[in-house]
Length: 190
Image 1 (cartoon, rainbow, N blue to C red):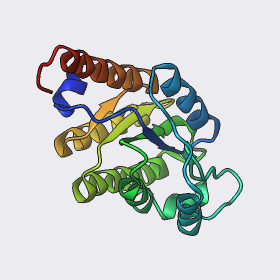
Image 2: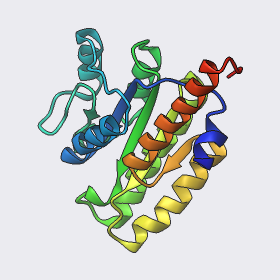
Image 3: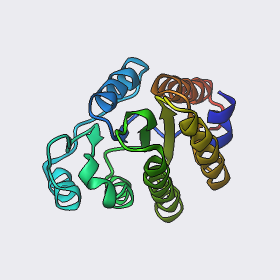
């Protein structure tokens, strides 16, 4: 909760866009977020069409919410998708799910791929202003843990909250919202 209160001094809302890689992992992440009280609304047709023009619709790509981009879309990165999410009024924040251990690439390539995606997240956070949360999980190699520590530091310095699991991020977000709702019910300022 300390991370949540540190990075979100005001309530942001329950409507979440969920962006990730790894197919089933992102769908499971969506289920976890919903169980913890957040809403994962479907995207309108226009947003899905715009996302498809950005990342294509190759096998393994899910163009809805949650949005899961395939390995071929890694070159495009997260920045243009985070721009779409920032422009869309139907969500309050984005959770980016980094399932680092699911990539079937040599560890050296993992670092290059994930660094690019974290750079995209930081740029989008700075450029667009809509809240972003990062979840790093499914570490399978020592190199993944080393990378995770550096990625978290990068995110923290940019003002982006990071968590170890979707459940923790969603539960903390839900508790933060309940806290502000209770304050509002008592007539206290947010």
